[in-house]
Length: 441
Image (cartoon, rainbow, N blue to C red; front, side, top):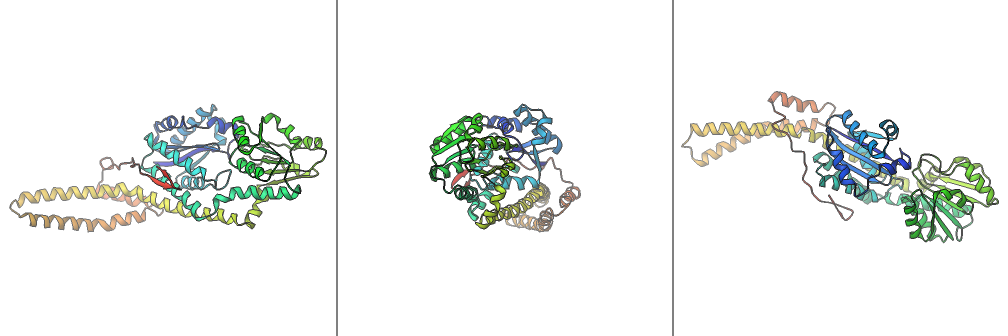
């Protein structure tokens, strides 16, 4: 078996591809079942948000399993595998833990430290369990990820880092424009970071807040929340003519605001100062606008130094340290779990040998008192337990070392254990985990 994740996110794919791959709440149970029905997929779960679609699976064969997952995503997006592959990322075994823990802590989000992702990962697990596609492997991996996410948010200030980026950027805008009250603003995008920016702009008393987004419903919803107005993406350049502050954060892989468009808008403004806050990764605003007179461009790279000064970089590093620590612990646990079937098989075989010998003993000593018979049984079982204790403990310890699984294989060979007869149950019991005060399956 191999633990894998195949996915698309704002870091790897353009917005239109993410939109095509998106799995809504109503579609998620059916899609999870479709993933789990693959001949090479033993367990599966899907995490779908506005900025990512990820298929997690325990597959029977790595290459065949990854091929199945890739084909499913290609079918969903309406692209060929060849078209989709350059935008996919694939992680295997320990890299899956590294990725999922980073995701659930908010390190991989457009808004660093967002807490919403906890609920989205929790929902992905719950749907997979309801569909019967999450067994012991994925249940344990996801449950541990949720605990890591909760730990990161409770032990650090990571959940404040995203809003801090916006606050610092708008502080620079205030200085560059000598105050923002009554100014006009343009927000490009309607995701989490754009929502934070629009909310802060409203609190700063800007006179007009315009929201532009590819999906009009999202733009209208955000505009309503902040008392602004939504316009179609086709009007982006026209709105630049009037805006004083432009905040952009989309998932586009190319420039949303090209230097040529900004140059035309700047000329139409009569040279009035214009401030751009680019919060996107990759960048939304063409860096060439730096060369325009009275135009200021600040991006995430510029804000990185300010985050260090304000202490949030330390929070991010602290979360990375938590992730690294938890990944190491998770790998150790997974290696130990891999030898559990061998230990179980060895102990079951020993129990069967004891039972057979006690049955033979009873036939030879039919008149033995119940007390004496019980003492003989307890003595035999204690001897066997003591003989098995050291090798079973040591095989668990050695499993975490390079080539450690060879010791379990040696036990199989030496004791002639039947892996089919003693197959470990892989469907985990569903239990409830508290995450940030909410029930999480």
